[in-house]
Amino acid sequence: MGFDMRRAIAHKRDGGRLGAEEWQAIVAAHQCGEADDAQMAALLMACFLRGLDVAETAALTRAMIDSGETLEPPAPNCVDKHSSGGVGDTASLVIVPIVAACGVPVAKLSGRALGHTGGTLDKLEAIEGVRTDLSPERFATQVREIGCAIAAQSERLVPADKRMYALRDRTSTVQSLGLVAASIVSKKIAAGAQAIVYDVKVGSGAFFANLDDARELAQRLVDLSASLGRRAVALVTDMEEPLGTSIGTGLEALEARDFLNGERRDARLLALARTLGSALLAAGGRGENAGANFDAMLASGAAYERFERMLAAQGMRPGALERLAPHAQSAPANAGREGFVAAIDAGALGRLGRELVDADGSNAGLIVHKRIGDAVRVGEALATAYGSVASAAARAFQAFTLDDAPPPKRPLVYFETASDSDARGTAAGARSTLEIR
Image (cartoon, rainbow, N blue to C red):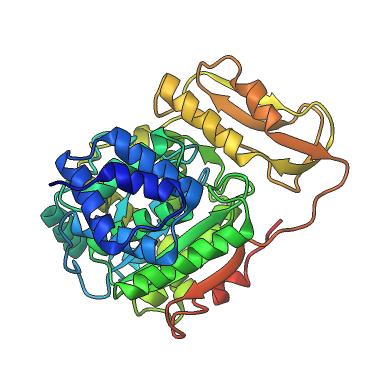
């Protein structure tokens, strides 16, 4: 007799907890078709409403890992980095080649857009020819030969997560601490990295607006990783406004290109990239002078060269980076009064950016011109919308709140936790250089 999925759904719906053997059976039943998507969606909603405790999260994580293969570390001291999801977050695209250029290999499995957030894979695939569907063997070979790879989870790596990830997006069950943690950690373990740096976002553009929830997720990610034999560091970082200035798959790829080649570097994106990059270098055994080495690889052009090599290895067409450009149609969102930017609804901008891309392609989206705390004159552009959606500029304007006085400054990094004392504090040296509004 097969597994009784209906009973498991009802038990979770009524506030019960499911044991390790039950989670193994649930994942297996969904994978083989014994439990269909409707049943899994019902269980996900029960998990969203009732929550998953630490033991359940660990059991689900292990079951998801066991649904496929697990890679051996592709290279010694291999690291990985993951963001819990934000708006204008191009950090992975810029950090991975910089860290690789510093001599620490990066093996990164990434996901697609989820809810209002952008997906790293979608941004990469906005570059003509780039493929992210690498086989496990090709993924590992590229990490050894190039020093880095950013790829999708193949059907052989955590296939259970791939199906559940899509269902969570379709059923509005994304913001579940346990489901988020299990999804993230299962991919990291399967990819073979020996140390992981987690960037947990908090604020209007994140899945968690409450700092306590973000801290709990950060701690759970670290503890889960440690229980599965990986060193881990987690930072809780600000997402009350977009991280970079660009929102939309192709526009974010364009920002990453310009960041790495030195044409334009947003200060906020640079500050967090340096902090996370220093943590990754420390996790990979190169913590001494991490910030200075990060800066040197960026300034010398070595990081941009590594970026080009990674993309070329993944199929980029000649000249594709140079051809990246915003959509020809644009409209500014102009301020109707003078003052200071008091708040930005990053989530609303993320949803609008995704809608523009869906309507007009990867070169559509938004570019933000003003940050929280910035002074604004009448008629000055707060943001520019790219694409043909008629209401886009007006909707972008609605995401900005202006006031007569600047708001209090906020930290960019709120909290840091690590799986061991040696890893703790890896970002502290870089953090002192940050200027945060």
